[in-house]
Length: 72
Image (cartoon, rainbow, N blue to C red):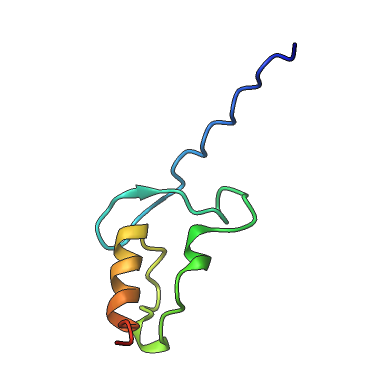
């Protein structure tokens, strides 16, 4: 019989959203090699705020939805 192995603990939050202040995990900053934000549609250049660090999943998702509305 094999001993079950414990699942690795999720990474601790590494960043604070520059819009709402929520803590979240940036995969790149946590050394994961990939981040959840890479799966979202890219924001148009006009939606990127110079000097504004990362946004949390909720804020970036809302901004991506406004910038890239679904096609009916």
